[in-house]
Length: 84
Image 1 (cartoon, rainbow, N blue to C red):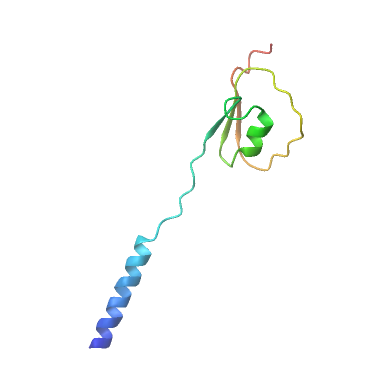
Image 2 (cartoon, rainbow, N blue to C red):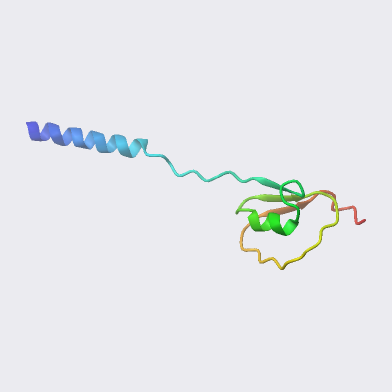
């Protein structure tokens, strides 16, 4: 009888631990703004994570390095219809 009670207590404890264990949560994506957060688009892209958006304000930006893109991000320009 004592053995059955002890087993029941252990099973309840295990079930409680399993049900209360924290679930894996994916971090939310963020928006990185150039030049507010990073002075260059390259730095923003390098520091972006999968799912992030890099938003580039209007302006002229110099590319000083070659980028290899190995993540899924969105790249949005402030005014893509303005070519000046």
